[in-house]
Image (cartoon, rainbow, N blue to C red):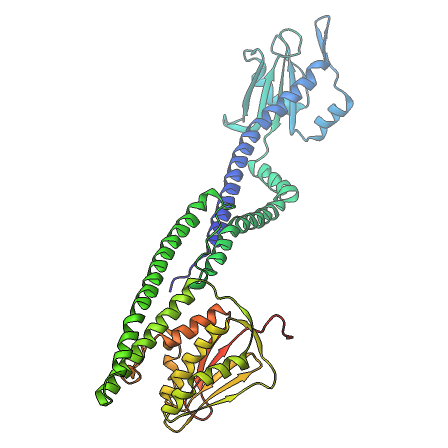
Amino acid sequence: MSRRWSLQARLAWRLGLVLLGSTLLVAVIVSQYAWFALDNLDDVGLQIQARQIAPHTHVRNGVMTLTLPAELEQAYRNSGDGYLYAVIDPAGQIVAASSEKARSAFVDLAFSHPADGETVFRLLDAGGGESSYYALQSSEGLPPGYRVIVAQGQVHPDVYIDTLLSEFAMHIGWTVPVVLAAALLMAAWTIRSSLRPIKQLSARALQIRPETRNLRLPTDDVAEEIRALPLAINAALDRLEQGFEMQRRFTANAAHELRTPLAVLTARVAELDAGPETQRLAEDIARMNRLVGQLLQVSRLEAAPPQFAIVDLNDVAETVITFLAPLAIAAHKTLALTAASRPVLVEASAEILENALRNLVENAIAHTAPDTEVTIIVTPEPAIAVRDHGPGVPPAQRNEIFERFWRGRNRSQNGGAGLGLAIVAETMRSHGGSVSVGDSPGGGAEFILHLPRSRGEAT
C-alpha cells in the first residue's frame, strides 16, 4: 500500500527542494563570479604596482632617477623575486630594476616597441614557453618615452580556491545550514498557517449530520483560491436538504392520509363476527396502524429539533409500563420496573423519549418467551435498560439492527417494519445520547438508553 503524503508535507518537501536548488544556483553564480574576479585580480595588482612606482621617477639633465619609499623597496626585496619591476628609458635601456632577476627577465623586452597606456602579457621562459610571471607594461605617469614593466609570480588557482573556501567556511559557510533550517521552519509555519482554513472547513464539515443538516461551511474568511470548494459543498448540501425535506414531507403526508382509511377499516372489522379470519385481519390492521404511527414519529423527528424540559426517567418508565401492561398481559408476559432510589433528571422531550422506550419494550414483549418477564431498570447514570428473555441479538448484527427497515432473518415472524429501533437510535442522537445492545444477565437481549446528565444535576 502506497504511503499517503499530506498536502502540508508535499508543499514543505517541494519548497525545501526549491530552497536547495536556489542555494546551489547562487553558489554556481558566485563561483563563476569568483573565477571572473580572480582573472582580474592579477591585472589590478600589476596596475597598482605600476602606479606606485611612476610618481617616484624623476629626470634631471637627461638622467632618470628612481627613489622608492623605504617600505615599498623593502617589500620588493622581501618578496624573494615574487614581484619584479624595471624602468626603461626611451633608448630601450633598463635604468632601474628591483633585482638582477628583473634585469634578466626584462632584457628582451627592453628593446621592444613601447606601447602607450597599459599592456598585460605573460613573460616567456628561457625555452620560449610561458613562465609563471604575469607582467604589465605601462607608460602612464612617467616622463615621455619612459615605461615601467612590473611582474609578479602568478599564484596557482588552487591556492586562490583554498583561500576562498577557507574564508567562506570561516565567515559565511557555517551560516548556510542555519539559514536553510530557519527558512524551512518559516516555510513550514507559513504552510501550516495557510492550510489552517482548510482544516477549519474539515472540522466544520464533520459537524454536519442528519440532525444538523442546516449547517454550512463558512465562505467569508476563506482565501479566494479555495473559496470555490466550500461554495460547491454548500450548494450540494442545499440540494440534499431539499431532497431530504421532500422525502420527509412525502412520508408525513402518506402517513396522515393512511390514518383515516385505517381507522375506518378498524371500525368495520370490529363489527364482524368473531373468528380466526377476523382475528388475523385485526392483527394485520394493528400492524399497519403501528407502521403508520412509526412513520409519523420519523417525520416528526426529522422536522425540527425537539423541545426539551427537565424530565424524571422514573416517570418516563412508569408511564410506558402503564401503557403497555395490557399488551404484555394479553401475550402472557409480565412487565417489571426497577426504579432508581431518587429522581434521575435529564433534559429531554418526555413524549419523544416515551415513544423510544415504548418501541424497546414492545420489541422485548414480542421476542421474550411466554410466561417470562420484561424488566425496565432506571439507573442514575442516567440510563434506562430493557431486558428480555428472548433469543438475544448476535454480535454481528448489533450495529445493523438500528438501520431503517432492517428486520433480520425472523422478519416474517415478528411482523415489524424495521423502523422501531431506527426511531430509538434517532431519538437518542437528537438528545445527545446513544443506545447500545448487549446480552441480558439472565439470557436474552439488553437494550440501554444512555442520556446526558441534566445541567442542573451534580456530576
